[in-house]
Length: 262
Image (cartoon, rainbow, N blue to C red; front, side):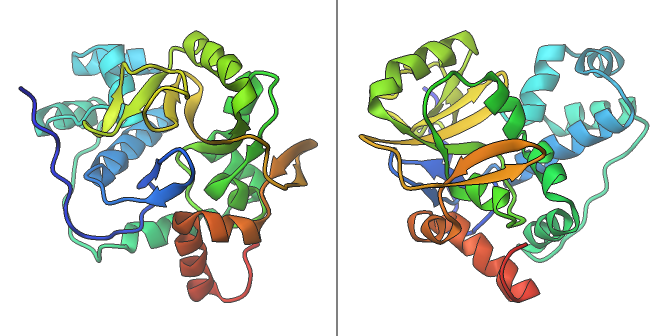
């Protein structure tokens, strides 16, 4: 029988450590930090070479599906597999040590130097919203903070939804071949997609990851515009109250830069 993955007993705020408990997204210790870094590095190198996943798979002697799982962070490649993938792109792995939060600081600094439109594109917000069904929503958490100018790492689109539209969301998740987050195994799996069923309100779809909190009514929100598009978002002050993970990242950014995000 498969044993659950052990979680280190250290409290680390990281851009990839949010989880949904059905009400709010909280920072969580996780073993996926290195997996996320590897996935992002491989994807960026592949895209820089203008290779498709299928082309890289052919070079490395594996399948396109395997490449997709690795780039999504759903699969941890072995060192041998990682070496094959890197060699297929004419690069090699180097190993070094750095302070625990150096990667997070670098990610925030990189986002701070980018335009808001570039931040939105990197987070895949429009990609998911373009495919999202016509149901009311308000963007929440780090997603809302990013849209209000805060250079926060965003690895999923976070939104507030209402229970009357849960069935519509389930239909959409089914159509987008979604997998639901399994808290026990700490990975996406074949759990019931219906948000009314027990489990985290977190799904991986073919257009990106969605994390949601549900209520009887949508939270108070404001509208922000970027690139001719309007986004309903929870105000930044409310994000900091409701989402301790986003609040910690905002505080970290302010300590580094001083002043308010922008």
